[in-house]
Length: 116
Image (cartoon, rainbow, N blue to C red; front, side):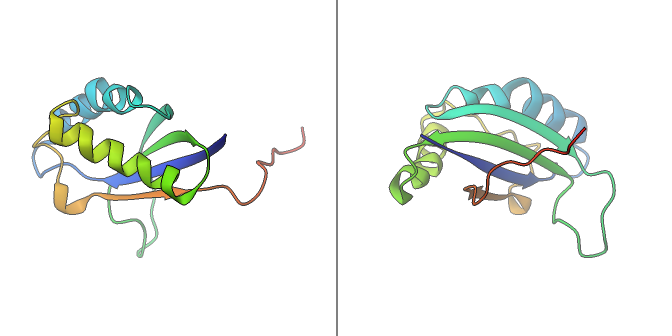
């Protein structure tokens, strides 16, 4: 099995930040983790950025396990799309859909840790 990460950068609809954070943290993370292959999720809020930084104010990182083939990796997006279409995953209107960026990354090195 291969572990990849799905990186999602997003922002709330203007004036909807509190509802966006409630929905994303309390519902959306768990909805995604209910799908096959998704094993963990964590959210982050933008703290400091360069002038040409990321195009959103929030980041979610999901770990996704697959056999590692291109078809298996594409399945992550297919699962998300199908779950959204079926209503298994509900997308809040508090999320600015015009500012959602998602990509799946596969590791090319082993994870390194700092020496203590």
